[in-house]
Amino acid sequence: MAKFASNEVQDAALAVVAGANRMVLLDGQPASFAAAVAAALATTAMAPANFTVAAGSGGGRRLTVAERSGLVAQAAGTANHVALIDEGGQRLLYVTTCPAQPLLAGSPLQVASWQVEIGAPL
Image (cartoon, rainbow, N blue to C red; front, side, top):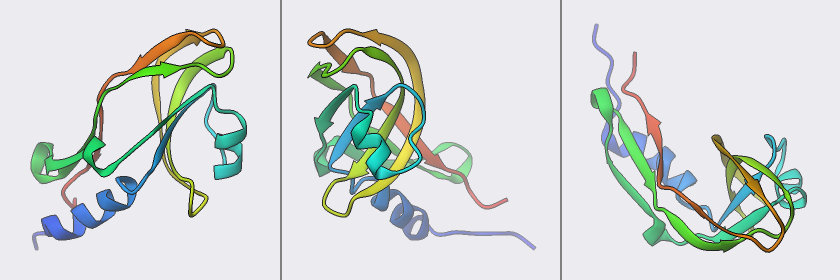
């Protein structure tokens, strides 16, 4: 028997991620919202316009997170993780790795566009 999940179901999950209002760059994976905020090397505000949902590969759905430029590092370290957080709800919504980027406090940086994908049911 085939398996199926409508785009609405998959998009609803991605909408939770797209509800993030801040992106945080970190040196390591945070275990909680508080840990992400405390260890932030750089942050930037996020808005609904920074997220786009479309067809993914193999029948799934994909959330594209727009490139963010003009950021300034607030602390020194190596950014190797990106987290999307909901500050109002104090929720850590999504964490992924990124190419390691050494940062010095006050240095400018940018984050390339990236995707979150939910595959079709197996």
